[in-house]
Image (cartoon, rainbow, N blue to C red; front, side, top):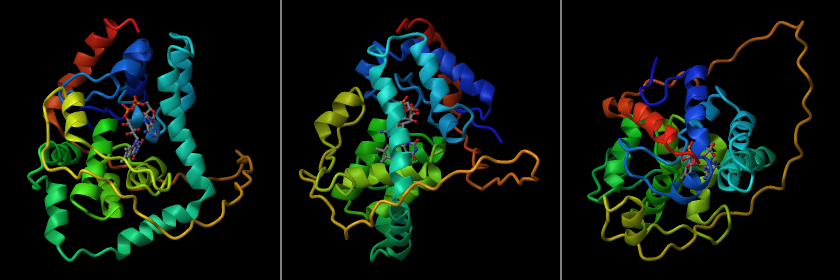
Length: 282
Ligand SMILES: Cc1cc2nc3c(=O)[nH]c(=O)nc-3n(C[C@H](O)[C@H](O)[C@H](O)COP(=O)(O)OP(=O)(O)OC[C@H]3O[C@@H](n4cnc5c(N)ncnc54)[C@H](O)[C@@H]3O)c2cc1C
């Protein structure tokens, strides 16, 4: 299986990191929120699929970046990597949040099933949103800011259940991660930081898509969703070191094998990124 944007090898991960590291300072901090489109170079690293599949580790990422920049210069990037770690730890301490997401997803039935199909297929008529739904299905990747806009429009403009949106992402993102995905959707909905929502606006989208999209008719307010109190934090499980002399099994899941997407135009983004980042200088 292969993927033109994310060749699933450690060599590809290391090559991407080598190209990105010089740009992890000022350029990342200033431009990481801009999404110029799937076929354009991005200030973001696009390393998440490799992190998710453990072809590269957070430690390797941060070490490579700090060998090129001071911590102060690369602080924004290091913070983002640590968000991933933080979300994983947060969910590990509260496994009932994952169980609650699954239960909510599985018991949610919509009176209007077509509304869900239209959102997933990109047939809502909302500029940008429809393009991103197709982009997700075709490439398996969305820019972070796009994920925020998409989730916000899904919940507050289309008024679709957040758990079905999180499920749509889980099924299609090549970096789909139970912690980062579920907790980010909860954050947009106002569940994660109770009462604090994220509202996508036409102005913000127009600015950070460089005028490609300026959707009209978006929700003007985002009232936080509510839920029953969460269960108390669970102590972390004690880990015992594996005994190399004991026979072991390698568990390969269907998620681990799901690197089979195609998007012709994205193939050239790799080489564009290489040229751009050589000129970056951080
Ligand atoms: C609704 C929603 C759903 C998301 N679902 C996922 C998901 O399933 N899997 C996933 O890995 N990330 C998820 N994210 C977080 C973030 O969007 C991606 O990690 C990021 O877009 C990956 O692109 P990148 O590698 O170019 O990021 P960069 O900007 O280059 O960041 C470097 C690394 O830091 C981490 N990171 C960056 N931003 C975040 C963030 N907001 N939260 C947690 N970690 C972050 C990622 O590991 C990323 O590879 C989600 C965000 C939102 C708003």
